[in-house]
Image (cartoon, rainbow, N blue to C red; front, side, top):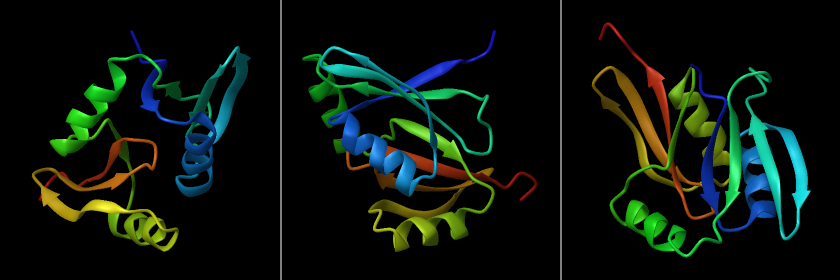
Length: 131
């Protein structure tokens, strides 16, 4: 069994698409209109056949309180792996991305957390096994 699609609930699919492609560098895999919303997935440019991230409309009444609780408690909705955390942190910061946690050591990883502008905190990590 493999993960094929995972998702983050977003406040606005158009804004999410802009952020996840223009700032994070993901590319669109599927963009299929479905009435008021879209089946909108992005993938890593480095792994176009890899796991898709669904930018899921957050219209369900349970989504708002759920997302607010995660953000209030500082819990990321998703985690993405990078090769060089410091380099990615600087790149994203130069693009205007707001970080809630700057790069820090956390056991076998280095991590940072940012606001995706769509109601979520997102974590990026660099594996540093052997430290």
